[in-house]
Image (cartoon, rainbow, N blue to C red; front, side, top):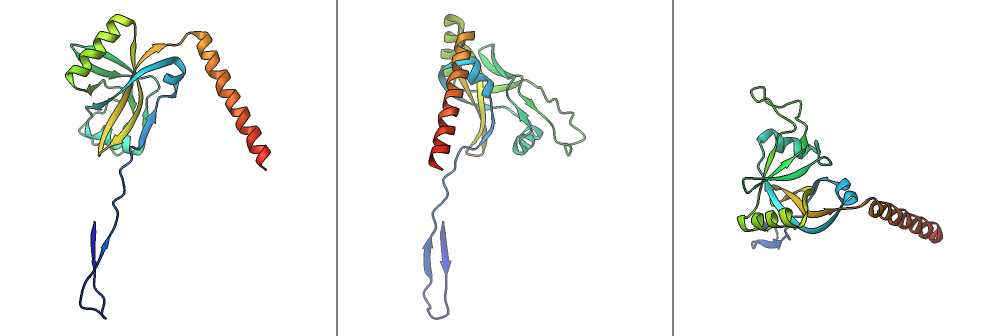
Length: 174
């Protein structure tokens, strides 16, 4: 960004260069339940096909991703169970469906690779989060394998151990 300034005591303009803020991918929603229930093998980013009212609701954060899952139909990916609550100010000529199936957009080669892994090796596809990237809403999905019950207990045990260490460090520094 370039900014011109002119002062009374000088006839020449002063040039100031201002740094542009880097765009960060801001999170809209996370699926914390997925990390508890699955081991993530690979992560992918996919675009979403959304309607206008859905984008407005996502800007307001009115979304729930915890019950979402990805299915494959006719070599296309669809996100089911993503709940986007409509705003009260939604248009009167549109009847919003909060649990509408959303299509995921990825390259054909990536989709075919995912189909092969899901069908052969017993993997599943789960949505991890929704985030903004370059003004568009993206969904991060993971190729995942389900955790056994003892693995879930180990996850809880590790989390509680980390909390205890953080508490001990916090009280030690005081």
